[in-house]
Image (cartoon, rainbow, N blue to C red; front, side, top):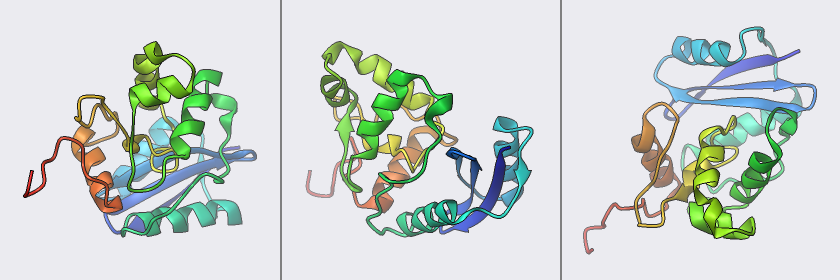
Length: 178
């Protein structure tokens, strides 16, 4: 049985959904709680709202902390990987190891997977990421210094906002001295 909860963050209302084996989805913050609820229920129509277990509560606390600029790691967050292809799970494992405030390129992840030609496949896997923030796909950028894609609501602007909150030099955003 899938359950979910909504919670307020510094940048809006977020949501998490979980099952017996861990998190099955994260919904990025939106301005209104009802928008977040609709988004969660669109992905998990049979989910019921519930009180999160302790491990999920810890993830919620970490998401809140990250969104106010704390350097937070989610490498040990409980994910239900049964619903994702094996290749995607490998990509997500590498992305989860990227420290807050740092980035890797799609190509660098492809090389870590053993084939630099997998960069496009890495991008597609990250575009299917059910756990944005927890699996920090926003920390993966294009090779040309640009942010690359971001499939979440708000697109690249959301990606740049998350990178800025973490203190990362936002890809393709020159500083005052560049």
